[in-house]
Amino acid sequence: MVNNRTRTRLLRRPLNVVSLTILILFLAGAAYTAVTTLSWVWPTVIVLAGLLTAAAIKVAQQWEKAVVLRLGKFQRLAGPGLFVILPIIDSVSSWVDQRIVATGFNAEQTLTKDTVPVDVDAVMFWVVWDAKKAALEVQDYRAAVEWAAQTALRDVIGKTQLAEMLAGRENIDAELRRIIDERTEPWGIAVQSVEIRDVIIPTSLQDAMSREAQAERERRARIILGTAETEIASKFVEAAKIYKGHEIALHLRAMNILYEGLKEKGALVVVPSTAVETMGLGTISGLTSLAGQAPGAGGDFKG
Image (cartoon, rainbow, N blue to C red):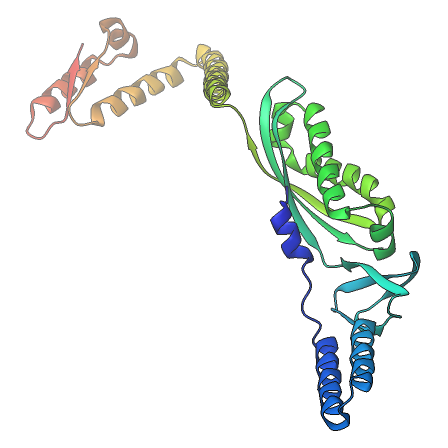
């Protein structure tokens, strides 16, 4: 929320140089008249005229609108630039800034739909599109916009699951903008966008969510591994069906596996004697043993 000191700084107006210059000129004329006439009547009249003239001339900045009241009733919107009012009869009740305003607001220790306490920080961008409504329909439109935003944020948090809040901030931003804009539209204020900056959850809950996320990752890894094993097993079944009626293809595959095992340096391959007899690899195994005894041989074979 914007504190009183900040609000005072925002509403502080620059010095009206035009009115000050006119008042100085009238005061100088009054002083000259008093010296030359040696009378206080005309100097007093000149000073009063200078005060009234200075009070009648107003200057609004390019981004401002001045709300002019005449005897307490709305008269007109003036500005930007130089404008004149009737002193005593007219008054400028407020100066409305029509630039885009950024307002930060938050909701502390607010329960979500699944009863999780969270602290949420958000920022809202809004603009006054009707200065008359903003000045006349609400006492302090800045404070009203801030309170409307904060209550809307609490309402949305109470209707949202924590997981939805963490994963779908865009939807919450759009919902907040819609709710706040409906509340401020009668005041002549339009909400352009609302953005959630941060969602803070308790430390204990962060640890629990971290463990839950880790367990979920492990579960997915096991599922992926099981799926891969299932696919491999199905491929083995298909290969077995093919090899069932083709013994030569099976023998060639066995020889290829044996070769792959022997070509690795320092590898030890154990082949059952039944497999050797079946494939007729006795001669090959003998040659392999001799090759293993040769200098630089990298594989061992046992039958």
